Length: 356
Image (cartoon, rainbow, N blue to C red; front, side, top):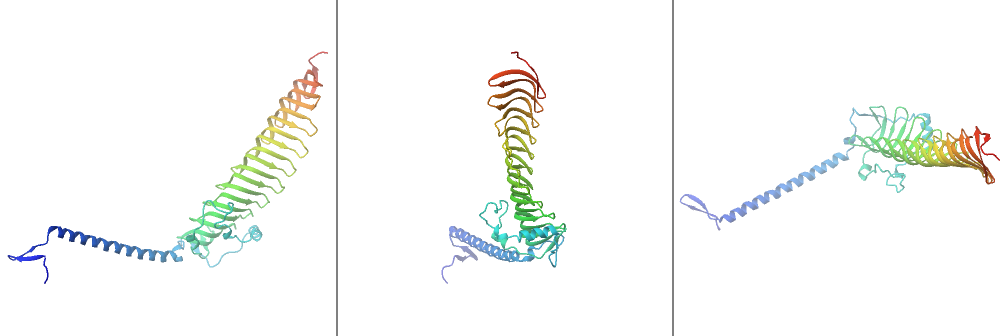
């Protein structure tokens, strides 16, 4: 019968195997049980993942809850007239122009669609609780990926979505005909974008939370063009403006006004460089005329005020006090290097201080 580990003696079985062999057997049994346990766990996880993939691939999983959106049988096409005109002019929104684009102005900084996003199902039109209608991709009951939304007022958005919010590159046509094409974040213009007003005004540049902010270019229907910094949707900071009448300004802006230090050139050859306040020469500056005349001194609300020197030609000049744009107070009049001190009142000399 072979070697037996036990022997019957005096009515009892005695274990003849050494203790160390027994311990090794126990360790082996525990190790085998652990292997079987791990293998069963691996098989269970694998089966779960297969089932999970099949469920996630099913469009049913991605449908929104009935209390959030109701499925419609067809998509409405009765857009507002201004929206129809814009759609006809712009044509369809081309998603592929913005997916993984190398153009920095077409590449979103806020959302890039993934390969998994591309596989998300396009579901039937759904009317949302706010009355808007959405047609596009869904992910676990949320608008996600490519999609188009029509609001009750007729405004239309087409572009990318994430977590039920407009996010990434997209185009919004407002009910009044205004159009924004660019980057979005959490339902707000955020990044680079182009906003075209119905009246023809166009802004192209940076946005932060629905406001023009950063570097941008704004062009108006009369061909006036501003290029520079924006803050809170206003020209603010360093910039330059090319006016339709051929005037030109380069310098500082504040809240849409020329404000700070800057240089203005008129189309007829005049130019001023110095301090500004609310679109007016205000503070110290220098004004030059094309015929050679010049003024160097202080201004107040576009008029010479305070101390200043007016050079008429190479032989004639006045240096002294000014008020409301006229010589007023003490001054010195120089003709061919011969100075004469006098007193002026509202541009008229009333006396000479020196005697010949």
